[in-house]
Length: 378
Image (cartoon, rainbow, N blue to C red; front, side, top):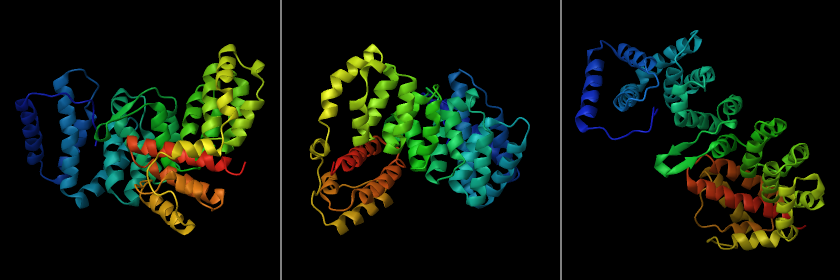
């Protein structure tokens, strides 16, 4: 649910008094519908303030609202759907009602309610200071849409996060996400098709560097021509460093060939120095180097092709989690590289359903496998 601000400890008597007041206000209502309307009016009244006690009161009000909705979801959800439709159609809707109530409905309702909640999210002004203060809830709402492969989420991600320098903290996993990592989770959870959307944004200099950073996490060699054009248009160090990461960590042999054929004279001086520094590593990158890097990860290294496919399918079902298979088992497999690449691409997307540091580490290992397979046989 929403967290209006990072919460600071308050005296116990004040928190208790706030909760008593909220319970009393709901108890006075004649019906669940009136209680819900009372809560939504309270949310509409919320404004950005700096007073600590008022901020904590806002948090308590919003938490109490979700508890109210959950007391009887069967009765609450039709009311919330109706209120969301009205709010979405309003000339000046409350962004926080759209966001917070919409997120609750999306998490708890069926297809009809999810569609209403998505429509509400599309009306949210992502620049509203109250929304910015709740960017964690906004991110989590969009992450749910991405996991459901809802195409409406792609323009919403672009509007809210592609050019953002904000960050969020996921306390349950002690995970801090900057703008790039938020986008990696969002576009990555949506699936491989999001890469085409990202490639089109490489022509926009305002977000091109961010897009290349995201492609290092979720890209494929298909973006190589677009990344190459971006570098040709802006041959400066900031672009070159990101392009090099993409070429070596994603694009495979084609990326290595591109870098080795690059005329240093087309780059600025800092990029020339960087290329000279890493050229030897680029030249000696191979299937063997990736296999050696992955060999330290524990697990079974030799499996039948049938067993390996079963485990990859299980990883897809389990959001990328596996504690008994070494990545080297994939590299030792006799299965065609494209079969394994297809499975691992699905694993990577499903791994990004998990909001945790462990998920990011698993994606890094999967990406090493993907690029190693592209070197296999070269």
